[in-house]
Image (cartoon, rainbow, N blue to C red; front, top):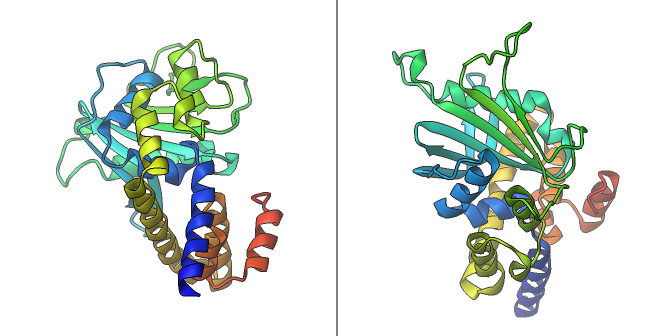
Length: 278
């Protein structure tokens, strides 16, 4: 019976895995982990700067403010004295203007050591890749920089916020091809080989599937820990529901969510329908 249950869980995970896209943040983070090539490609195309080469990157990096409030960055990378945060957001709630400001501020707060001059702050970029056009102006990319009111002069604080609207996939442009690839479920349909090879590895090889399964389990445990902290701050039941909704949004298998959260499958399905996630 245990063998049958294990095989059934594996088959359900393979079904979920087959539907993952790079537009699903946890799949993207796993695919980009230990792959500076993938990170380079994304940053180079979005910024139109082919010379950028990342020297270090952390996926699912947690930063905290002085009050202990944390944020988990999908990709946190450094290159050429510049700092980058790339976020995947399928819903508009997680890609608000103030979320972009908050991410940027935490990057700045952690960038300098005691006594370092403010001018040592790196040029920073917070990049949201969104499933829909959350800013609503019909553009494929939004580049936000502070300007001096009454003039067109840029306030040179070195801070940049960028929104990429993945719903526009103009395949005549590098950005459109990139967004096309982020929405693909199969490697064979993708334009960029460096991305296709990572997707193929995690979906079509035994080692890759095992690695992805372990990554999902680790993520679930991390989310459970976060939910415990949220529960203490906001009320245990509310924090637990937040966890479940986040895991549903991340498309973790229902059996995994049930095991971590202790919710029944019926409760999970009800929550999923209530949040338009199932």
